[in-house]
Image (cartoon, rainbow, N blue to C red; front, top):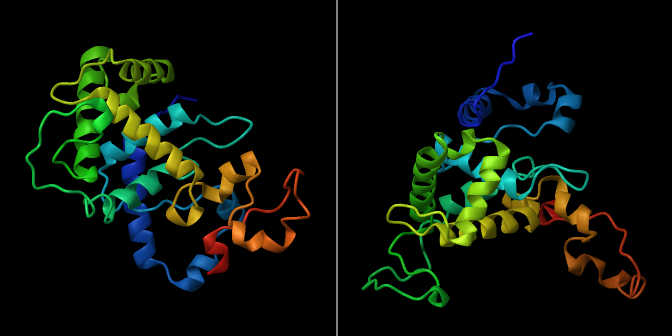
Length: 235
């Protein structure tokens, strides 16, 4: 059998379009008629709210490099990190609702934090574009098309300050990517990441602390072995 490889960005583009079409065409009865086994093993594709297919492919590759699938959890993408980031960037946070953006914008020191006039959505878009340009110049391919070892090497070079993007800070962007990965991996699943509470199960976190007030004394000094509870479990 021939080896057929579907580029990640093409799959994400198709999945997004399929998800939107299916949501519009499928009735409630048709949804219930879907094969139960498939629903248990594969999450339904979600339409992208703001990310382009190229951006989603980049994030998917980066998140899977940070969090590869192993015996402890699924990969970052399978845990819903791209969905988490897409929802974040499509909302008030992504639009810079709480940022001062009237300038003047001066060159700041690293400890002063974010100093650009871009919204988080614009920042991620510009960062992904710069990172793909660097990957293509250095490795001959855009980031999501690189071999896993090359992706890992490029992210390490960004972290070490060795990778130089044209007109853009590679290390601060790497830090923003990593922060996004950690937020999506450990956040409440209602926000799109931490699918099936994978990270909570991995570290033994029971979820909403308020729901365990009556059993706190019972587990004091002992391993907490409870089924994690998410906000969405109470809706």
